[in-house]
Image (cartoon, rainbow, N blue to C red; front, side):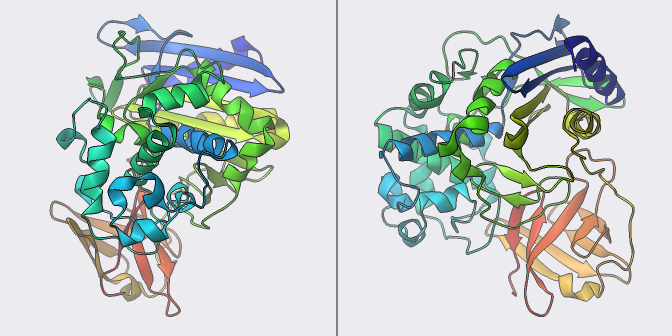
Length: 429
C-alpha cells in the first residue's frame, strides 16, 4: 500500500467517525509508510503533519515494560526481584515483598486498588522529581486487593519508580537513556520538558461537533500514560526492536488468559495478545482526554501498524480502519465488534448478583429475568447478555459498550466484575 492509498483510507475512516485529525504508520520489513489527515486543533485549524505529537497515553506502559526488560538484560534488576527491593517506600508492605516486578508487568501483583489511586490525577499535580516517590509512599499504607488480574495505573507508576531506583535517575531521564535515545525516538518527549511542545489537542466528539479538551498531565502518573507525547514515526521506531530483537520476545509471553471483549484476548508483559484469525498479533492502546491510539505488532510478518487520533471516537475508527488494513496487507482478520444481544447466553443470571467493590468504589449487581442491573453511587444501568460473561451496557459508547465478568468459581459464579479493564472483586466470593 503506497502513501496515496494510505492517505485515502485514513481520510475515509476519520471522516466516518468525525475524528478531527489522525496519523497512521506501517512498518513492513524495514520500510515505513505514513499518512496524515485533518487538524491537530479545531480551534486553530493547524494541520496534522509528520511533526505532530499525540499523547501516547497507556502506550507508555509498553515503553516502561521495554525499559524494564533492557535493565534486566543489563543486570540492573531482575523481573523476579520483589517489588519492595526496587520501590523502597513499600518495604513494609507484605504484598510488595511477595510480588515481583514480573507480577506488576503482568497486572497480577495484588497491589492496592482504589479509585483515588487509579484515577486521582487532579489530586496529584506536583511536577517535581519526587512525585513518584511520594505516590509510592501513599500506596504503602493501603490494603492490597488480592490475587486476580486487573488492569491498573498504579502498578505502572510503581514500575516507573523501580526504574528510578535501579538507574539512580529521574524516570524521564532513564527513559531517554534506555529507550528513546537508542531507538532514535528524537520526536518523543514529556509534558515536563521546559521546551514548548508542538502537539495535537484532544477532542470530545459530540452531536454538535468536536469539543477541544485540555491535555491530562500528572507527573505521579507519568509512567501510566499522562506525560509522553510522540509522533507516528517515533512509535514505529519503538515497535521496530520488538519485531527483531529476541531479548524483547519475552514480553510477549502470555501471563493471564483474560479476555475482555473489544480490548484483549490475553495479557502478556506490557503487551496484550489478540487471537485474530490469520496471524499472531500483539499490541496495546492509548486512551486519554479526547485522544486514542493503537500499536499492533506482527513479528512473523516483520510488521507493525500505528494509529494516533485526537478524537474520542478514535477506537471506533481504529476498528473499522484496521479491519480493512490488516486483511489487505497481512491476511489477518480483525473481528467485528458485535453488540447483538443474546438473552439466554449467560444462563442463570442470579449467579452474577452481588456486591463488587474497592475500598472507595462499590457496585451492586442484581438479577432480573433477562438482564442485570448494575448500580453504583451515581448510575443505574441495565446490562443485557452478549455471551456467557459479557453484557451490553451502552452500544453508543465507542470505548466501553460492555462490562465483563471473570474469575469464575466451580459453581459458575464470577469473582470479579470488569469495568472496562479494571477488576472489582466480589465481596461475598
